[in-house]
Image 1 (cartoon, helix red, strand yellow):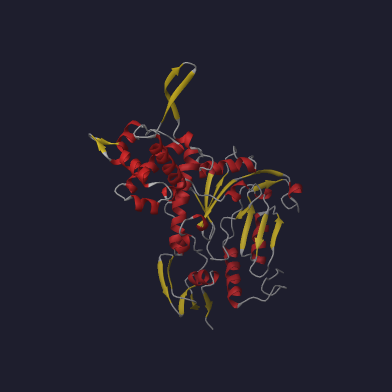
Image 2: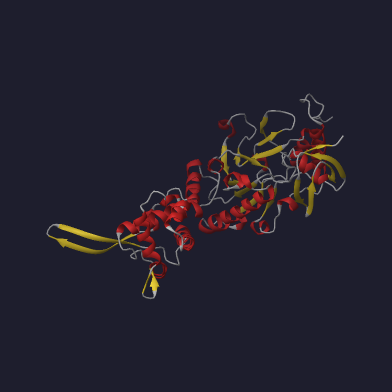
Length: 413
């Protein structure tokens, strides 16, 4: 006889939680998650609706055992280890025997500037845009991982995970994974690498040699971070063209405390035409920084570009997740207890058309009507159906589960 979290010694729970648990159970009975790769080498972890602890150090040898656990215990959240172990159920990490781990990247709304002012759909769209850039520019671009070794996972909540199973990275330790994060975020970039110095003239006077130095601007065929700086510089200069010095200082923190006369000199060197072209044109056509009338104006430009462009062009990732070689991460095709949405695994190509509020709504949650009382006015689209709700309403079951899990409604009496 299976145990029941609603009656089997669990803390007293609300009728809304009972309702959610009953439908989560029905979902796992009809649509259990497929086992992950290296299933028997993974540790599993669970959080529950009706218990305050995290259950860890669980392992399964058969997929049916995992399914039986999900049906009998009905966890709110299901996790599995990015690592593979000799004995995944052992109670300590030393006893588990670490064999390797997938390389994991995590990106959610916490990493998106201004997310706190966004609606849930807007937040999901912003995170998706950023995860696509992480994949295309950094992981599959600069680092050269193949699409066959990358899986994208919608977390069921506010973001996405990327799993890289390339055998070249599964044995990497924490500090090596941290170096990958540092590359993506541009942590150790220097001005001297982006804009390298080039000695172009030597003058000898008695026993003293003076070397004049010029700096190179990244050419059009640059790759990786130099290409990003070239593109970012072009965007930045288009932004400031025509702005007053006061407006520039208000908008760009890197210039806030710089003297007006030096900013004016930099702007004149960039935008004032001398003959047919302005300094900006020469910068991009000839890849030279010898367009400035003084070293101070040039150095101010370099500081401005470096401090403004780097954060714009950096990839966004959660460093502790990537560097953790024993991380528990959400198991694909399980349910997220705070939304009722599926944790969905997909390829890079499938990501383009993926809409979480359409494609992550479980098919097992039907259109049967459910009466709710919503806590506030709500306007949201689920399964391509718009819901504008206020007060006591009747909605399809799939929408009811979503609103109840998010605690935006209660069951009507």
